[in-house]
Image (tube, rainbow, N blue to C red; front, side, top):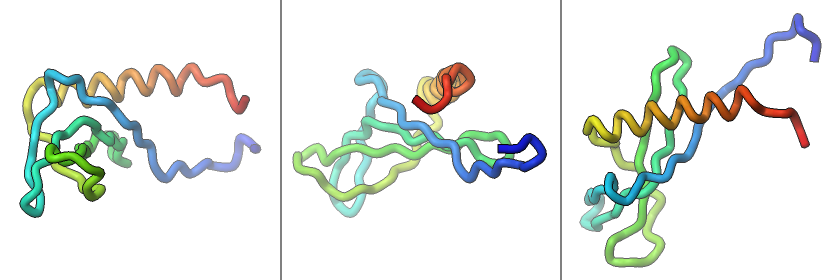
Length: 97
């Protein structure tokens, strides 16, 4: 691609496994979920947004439902550290394989 053509990146997102000691439960539609994964997005203004996903504690697949990430210090740090790590990995890419 020519250097005079701007590449438009529409989204940057990563999935992050929540360490066991930081996992939490939340309820949606009367069903309790154990939240085990974060989806972290880089917003156009440079800030980060995160949503949590997990499985019903009663078992089964359950619905694909997002939950807010609590503003607990350790979870805020996890989101920030994950973004920093993703930036390192992206900056070291070796192009298409």
